[in-house]
Image 1 (tube, protein in one colour):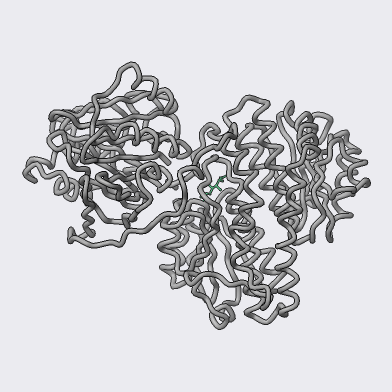
Image 2: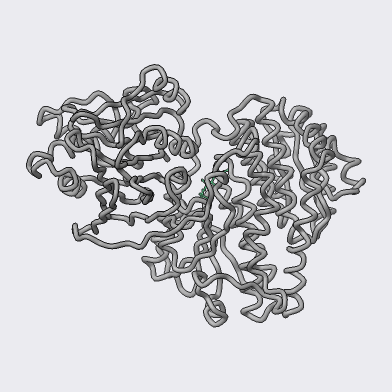
Length: 617
Ligand code: F6R
C-alpha cells in the first residue's frame, strides 16, 4: 500500500518523470498524493487529497521550480484521514528533512510524545511525520549527515517501512531504507531513481537492483551505495528488467482491467508453453524451481497458502495436485496460518502464491514456515519481489505487469502454473505415465485457440444480457462445484470488489444448507454448469433456484440447451476437459463484473478502499 517514486539526476528536471512513474503506482493507493523537491537549500512540497490527477492539476497552476531531485508518493491511508495535511511527503517542523514512506510505524505514538516533549510540533496525524522529525532530531549529532541520522533513527522504529528521505542542505542525494516494504533502485544514465516497484521506473531505466530488508542506501546521480544492517558497504549486481513501458500502459483500452482480461490467451502461452516438454509428457521449470524428482518424492503433502484472488488459485492448486499427482493438498489462508498452533512442518512443501510477491500476510506465512524448518515454493508474477527472493524455490508466472487492482490475468497465470506444477509432481512420483502427461500437455496447448470464442461479438452480447440481470440487484450468489467452486468464489470476489454489489461464492451443495433462504425474484444466482462429474448436480441446483423465482445466469458449454433453457442469461464457453474448465469459466465472469461495474459508473481499475499490493497485515 502506498507508492513511492524518487529520483536524483545530474541535470534537468526529474519532476515530470517522477510524476509519470507515480501514476503507474496509483494501484497501490489513491486517496492523496504529493511531491517534494529540494532547491536553494529549501524543501518545497505540493500535496493534494484525491488522485494524482488532482496533484497534477495543482502543479499546473502552482508549479514547482525545475529540480534534479524529487520525491513523490501516492497514499493509501493508514494513519489519519485522506486530507492534504496527511498526504506525503512530510517534513520535520523545522523543514530540514523530507520523507516519503510506505508501511506502518507501530510505535509512532510513543515517539511522537517524546518528540513533542522535546519541542517538535506536528501538523498531521501520520506516523511518517514522526519519522521525519525523529530523523531531523538526530541530524545535528551526526554532523548533518542524513544517512547517519537515518541509521541512528531506524533502531528506534518498530514496524514496516520503505522510506526515501532528502535533506534541505543537499540537493544531490537521496537516502533510502527498507524493512518489510518493497523498494527497488533504478540505475539510469546520469540519474538514479527508486520506487515501490520496477514498472514505475521503466520511463527512466530498465537496469535495477533490489534493496533487501534491513539495508539502507545513498543515491546520487551516478551511484547507489548500499549498506547492510551493520552499516558496512555492500556490492550488488544490477539486473535487467525485460518488461517494457508499454506493457504497463493501457494501450488504447479504456481500463487496465479490460486490457488484462483480453491478454489472457497470451498469458497462457507466456506462463506455460516454453515449459512444456511434449516428448517426455512432462514439464520443465527453470533452475530456480530447484526440485528434482527425488525431492518431489520426499513430500507427503503440499500446503497452498495465499490471500484474496491468489487464495482461490491456492484452492485450485490443491485440486490439480490431488487429481494429477494423487498427493494430498491443504489450503490455508496465509493470515490465518500465522495464528494457528505451531505444529511441526514434517515433510510438507508449502506453496505460497502471490501476484505481487509483496503481500504482507503471505510473506509472514512464508517466513513462519521457514522458521519451523519447512521449505517454500513461491509462485509469483514479479521478478525481484520479496517472495521471489526469499522463497526456497520459485516458479514465475510471466504474466507481465498487472495494473488493474482487480486481479485477472495474474490469476489465470497462477492457474496455468499450478496445473504445470501438479503435472510435474505427478510425473516425478510416477503417478502419471508419459502418455498421460502428454495428454494433459496437449489439452493445455489446444486451450489457447479455444479461448478466442470468449472474445467474440456473441460472447460480448451474452455478457450484456447477464449484466442486465446483475447490475440492478443488491446481492447475489455464485455457485460452482469441484474445480469450479474456487471459480464461483473468484467470480463473486470480482463482482463485489469493483461494483460493490454484495456477492458470495459457494460450493453449490451448500446452497440448501442456508443460502437458499435468500433466494427470491430480487436475488439472482450465477451458476457454473459446464460438463464434468458434477454437471447433473449443478442442473438440479439451477432448478431449485428457479423454483424459488430466482433469476439464473449460467456459465455453460457452447450448445448446451439443457442449461441455457433453464437460465435467464447464458454465458457460453468452449467445451474443454473438466480439469481445464476453471481457466475458461473464469473469463466470462471477469467480463461480467467489468461490465456491471462500468454500467454502475464505478472506478473499475481503482475500486474504493482497496490497494493492489497489501503490504500491511
Ligand atoms: C483481488 C485481488 C486481491 C489479491 C490479494 C493478494 O482481485 O487482487 O484479492 O489477490 O490482495 O495479492 P497478491 O496476489 O499480490 O499476493
